[in-house]
Each structure stands twice: as structure tokens, then as C-alpha cells.
Amino acid sequence: MTPANRTPPRKTALITGGSGGIGLELARQFAAHGHDLVLVARNRDALEAAAGKLEGKYAIRATAIPADLADPDAPSRILDMVRAEGIQIEFLVNNAGFGLGGEFAETDINTELDMIQVNVSAVVQLTKLFMQPMLLRKSGRIMNVASTAAFQPGPLMSIYYATKAFVLSFSEALDEELRNSGVTVTCLCPGATATGFHETAGVTNSRLVAKFGIQKAEDIGRAGYEAMMRGERLAVVGLRHKLIVQAERLGPRKLITRFSRLAQENR
Image (cartoon, rainbow, N blue to C red):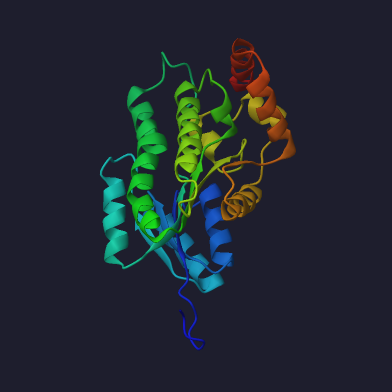
């Protein structure tokens, strides 16, 4: 029990891809609610700048750990660094990820293998590593960021869509396994979001972006944080995207795949 004259220690959230986009907006939500942060991203300068700004604005502790999750050894090194700092992780947010547009026959296999490592393998590794202490103390929350892409095949972005389908399936199964354990798993599935993702993936001219619009990263961050704190298993943000997801679940698979290709094609 905490003495009346002492403030309870703040809980800490570890967020990958925390230097920008949805990851940074999630970090802002945690910081605004009084939680310390461990931010992980590849770009040291951007990462340290983000950590410094969050510390200054919210008077919390923000630890920056530069790491490239395309390296299979990165998750274990992150765990070692967190332990060396004496930090206990209460909230794990697996947000880092990237995509690549184009026909599979023509895209670069090394980029795609890196994508699988970042979007899938690192998520599994980090979840396994940081979940164990949560289970021992019967307290913790995990968020895996997938996408509305998780609900259907994605011609012209086949590997990216497949990685997000894995994240969704893994998250839902794990949350069921952990039922009554004190640990919850939330899968956040945003639609197209203003983060720089589409520029990196080379799909800024797709019909998907033009027809369905771009969600604001701050809206995704706020909705994701709230869903995680409620212990929700699945969080799809926005009525339009919720309706699309339900239609995709009910529609003929071949037809959904065809529509998915049309959405990914350039205007």
C-alpha cells in the first residue's frame, strides 16, 4: 500500500514506431494521462526530439531507444535496455510497421522480408518477451496495431495485407487465451491515416486514398488509447470503416478481393 504522503509510481508504456504518426499520437495520449514512456524507432534524432517534447509538455519520463525492428535481435536488445533502466512495462504498443505497393512479381523481396520481420515477427517477439512479467503480476495491456487491410486480401499490396491479417488473428486469439489473466490484448485497425505511410509504400495515387479519405492520426491515437484502457479486443475507428469491415466479412471472398484490387489501383 502506498503511504498517504507518497505519489504512486507512474506506469510506463512502451511504444514502437513512437517518433511519428499513430505511434506518436498514442504516446501523447499516454503522456497526457500521466504515464511514462519508452519510445522505440529507427531514426535517433526524430525519436529523441519526440521524447524531449513529450517530457517537456507533460512532465513525464520519456526514454528513447533507437532500434531497427527489421533486425531479428532488436526485440531482445530492447528488453535488455528496459531492464537495465529498471523500467517495468505496464502497456506494450506494437505499432511499428510499413507497406510496399506493386505487383508481387515485380516488388523487391528483401523489402518484403523486412516487412514480415517488422510487421509480424517483431510483434510476436516483443509480445512474448513483455507479456511474461505482466502475467506474473496479473496486470498489463497490449495493443497491436493492424489495419482495416487485415479483413481482406490485398492485391497490389499482398504482403502488407497478409501481415496485418496475421496481426489481427494473433491478437484476437491471444486475448482469448489471456481471458481472466489480468492482461488484455487490443487490436487497433485504422483505415488510411495521415502518417506518411502511403508515401513510403508508394500508393499515394490509389483509389483507396481518393475514395475513402484519410483519417487523422490524432483521432486514431485517442480512440486506440481509450479502447485499450477499456480492454476491448478489437478497435475499428470510424462508422464508415466499421460498416466496410462488416461488409467485407459477409461478402463473397472472390468479389471482395476484386474490389480490394480496384481500390489499390491508381486513379
